[in-house]
Image (cartoon, rainbow, N blue to C red):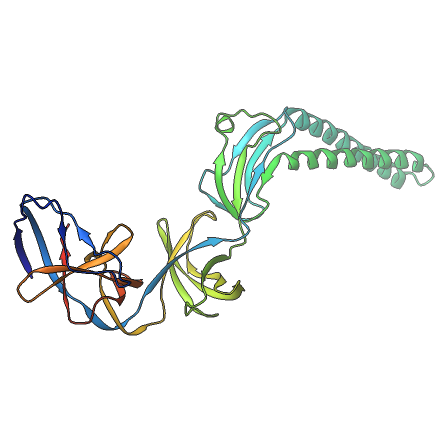
Length: 331
């Protein structure tokens, strides 16, 4: 309930010593107030029962690395940019293609020669069929040899032309496209496109007491997407920690490999514990206290020891009992 409490302090008293004392016999908690202070508060009940803490942890993809794409030939022209920043790509997808006038001219030249060789071969073969006594075997051998050499040159040029296309080496996300490239220019040997790739699996480090086992499915959120992941492997790390690995089950479409995922997981329930709203606890000089109310509405500072947090609540391990009323300052 809402109550307004006016506290009139003596002007000769710069501080107000309250009756709560340290559990270890230390100095009492002292709360400093301004004279004629007016404070708006509400009183809440300290609870006792079963509390289920909620663990919030972060998942990150494993094996994340950056792939920088470039070309070595400075005589190329930009033909097509097939991706933009943020695009998801699969291994083998076209990222950028280039055009070489020199290679295209050579390919056309050799193509013309190969076509001429083919016509001559057909011509000699036709003459051979018409005149059985004529012998064009030498001419045919020479033409076929020339044709094979020409085809080898064409294959080499076509290989170079194919090499002038940048394709994704792995599944991943495009994180950068050169501004110069967008303008149709580039410098050979410099990064033109950057891709971030990863294993597709996630992991996190948690406390060994967390009740999370192999096969469990968690709900995760990251940026503007959400999805479900299943625990695939758990490894011990030291005496108190565990490394937990996850595999996506559904959702997470279009998410970057660099995006961290947030998971909320219910920990083992705490039975028969005393707990209170976290904002009822104040801190001063490294110590925690609450303001406990008596039946007349006056309060005293009581030092408390804190345990685990569970959402808006915190466990009180020493200093309070269930059913007591404490002040929860509004703010």
